[in-house]
Length: 201
DNA sequence: ACGGAGATCTTCT
DNA sequence: GAAGATCTCCGTT
Image 1: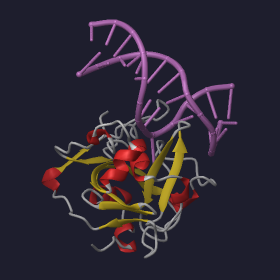
Image 2: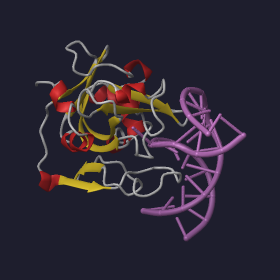
Image 3: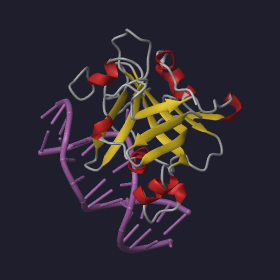
């Protein structure tokens, strides 16, 4: 299965968030391939977006958001969890843009995922941004890597694009009370209708 | 089934 | 010093 190219990621962030649905996220780990179908995403785009890490400008932590499209932005939060994002926006533009991967449908490496999410039903392995990084063993090692490099341990395959008729759109989830309109209700969350694996919030 | 609170640490104020 | 792009556990309904 071919990988998504730099061109794919070098578009308007919202468009990329929508188009990432149905694609396959793969972690080629030392223990084997662990992969899932992307069923839910959220876009964080621009200097004006109060919910985005890029809102207050470039810092050491978020610098990758301003860099080359197709790189991973993985950060630690709540003292426990890793969140995986993909940098997406027109290339060559100094503007923060990234897509949070919120949920996957488990596809490959099911035994590894079961072990990483021990004691939980398959439905709860990857139905949330913190859960899917646990299931796929994604952490600090995977921050700031180029997903389009042939030897990257983390990458995306073209998978199966999803038609508009199967896509639902709504406001983003879990934003703090410091975020105000219009960013609070911006329809920048995308998910596959009727998927059993979208996050439950 | 649903709601609330604690965990736990990095980043920015 | 506080809040955070979350999850899990424990209580009550």
